[in-house]
Amino acid sequence: MTHAPSDARSPAGGPFAGHVVVFSGRLASVGRREATRVVERLGGRTAPEVTARTTMLVVAAAAGAGKSGKLRRAEEVNARTPGQVDVVDEREFYRLGGLQSDETLRQLYHGLRQMRERYPDVREVRLRHLEKWGLVRPVVRTRADTYYGFHDVGVVKGIQEEIARGGSFRGAVRMLLAEREGQLALDFRELHGEAQPAKVVALPRPDGGAGGAGDRSPDVAKRAALAAQFFREGSDLDERPGEGQERARMAYRKALLLDPALVPALVNLANIHYARDNLVEAQALYERALALDGDCFEAAFNLGNIHHDLGRYGDAVACYHDALRVHGGYADAHFYLAVTLEKMGRSAAAKPHWRTYRALAPDGEWSDLAREFSE
Image (cartoon, rainbow, N blue to C red; front, side):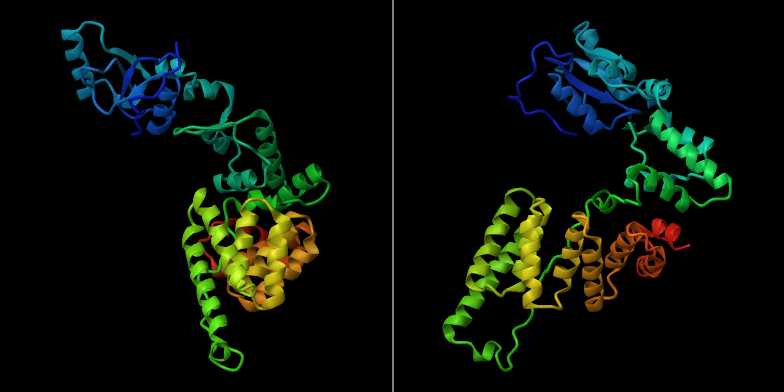
């Protein structure tokens, strides 16, 4: 459980201002961490156990009829100091915190369970696909259920009716996307979620042959060794968010000042720019890497992602093909190529890549989606 720091400033007049709140039992609609944030945001702080300092005990609905140890302890505190611990139920906590209970949400929206019962052909996994494509967007998620608005119900109802008429889920999705965008348009970034670009994790071993490390002057070899050191430093840092990424960027830049032809540093520096949506800078770096090494899989694959983001689907397809020429067993490259081909209306060309993705990643994140589109 997260605790507010002792010197945290509480909003004056907040519903939990000055309170030390303890929770008893599992809340139905929010997790303990979120409930703690609500208390802290509204002026109070939380504690794990009831003590002489406790001023509020929240008893979860799931706690049942029997008294918990925390409730008995609160009664003991109140016996010594009447009225010190305010015992409230879960519903009152939601009211004080400005939250909606699942009971209220069920009156306002349509829960996932209700949707499954009403539209059985739109299974939960298919609803997740619809969310990824941006066709439905849950209004709110709680621990108990996921809730959808009226518009989403209309979308799911339309797909259920299309399947009932003998159509396919895939065909129904195509129709909806075409109506919305005027063409089949899968949102590449939403579809890929938090996927990271391909990263170079190690430097290739120096070639001791002609033109390799053995023919370098001592000064060039020294600069190359120092560049490799900066690359390794950057590689260790760029997995860390925030300041780590910035320090990694500087390390890669130092490596490239020492060795402008260090392709792995070019790729990983480009990845940082790509993560920051600096697509122009990232594209230039990937292209520079490919000019130095036409077989750099990571540069070709990531450049394909950028072309897709910018709507240059033909260039994206070419890059994905180049990447697969080098590393034909990379499942994600087959998946992204299939998505791009679908957007271009080239479903027949996409099918082999949907199937290959399924074969390479049978338990992959998008295996169900690939099955839908490969059938």
